[in-house]
Length: 170
Image 1: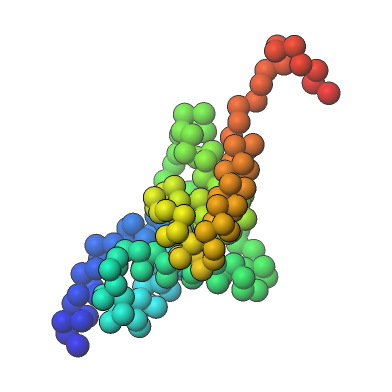
Image 2: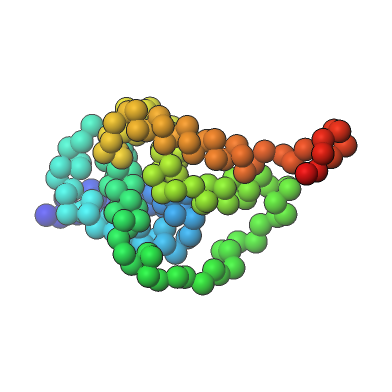
């Protein structure tokens, strides 16, 4: 159907940069983010009739993307294949000048479901109920995963107290 394909192409063209940023926040690798987006876009195309009829098309696409990410985390391929880190796509400033780098590193250290909950709640600005629908779990699970993720981020990102405060280094 030419109309259906044109509508899909227009949507994907407009929203791919946003989907790619969300995918990067989930997986912390631009190449892998591109793969996640490609898989999500393929699944979106297969279900385009249902997706285009959804009340919130961006929410539908985001749900597909997050589910692709979580399914990949459960799969064995990720555990068997170790990718060699490559230089970043763009040079960044020193970590002390750009707290975003520290945050991304701390975010990458979170377990996948905690990372997904934090990204959905705070980057995608979803409510607890919306995030639960995307993750396919209860609101309580989203709350606990988000709380654990935020606690871990706070521990990693907390500034180191100087020893001049009178504390023992031991």
